[in-house]
Image (cartoon, rainbow, N blue to C red; front, side, top):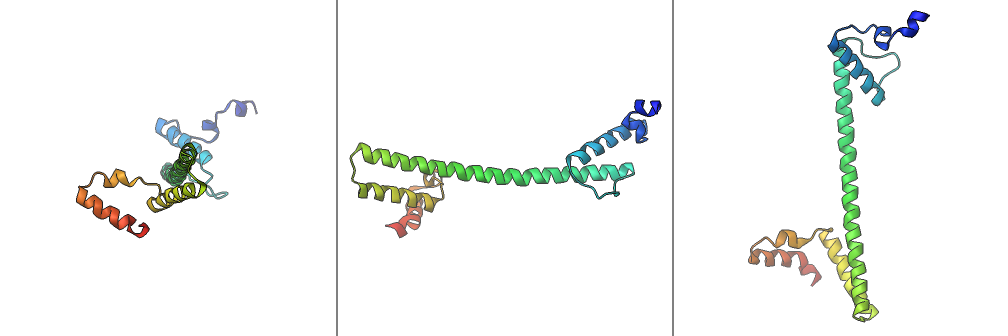
Length: 149
């Protein structure tokens, strides 16, 4: 009993004293703790199996992070674009009140702003089209906006 209490986990699990064996065992334990993988009594035994398991768990963690990172970035971008649109509509409202525009004209301006937002999907076309030669700019703008004229 007294000897077992003083025993480290390395000794309890009979990990060889080689440094690389201890690193492999430690990483195997760490990744096994972080990633809930395992099937009851099925586990890696040899160093090669443990290294393979570590690689698979690390790959899974990276893939998991990449997928959720991409989803989060997409949601944040959509929210940012919607917030910009809301700010534009607030600016339209302030403009209309400042210049004493009637409700019908204000609604037309807001509807036009929303139509442009929906058409451009939150992308400012001048950032792309503004760099083109003037003739090509006119061609692009006609193709994009002609249905609304």
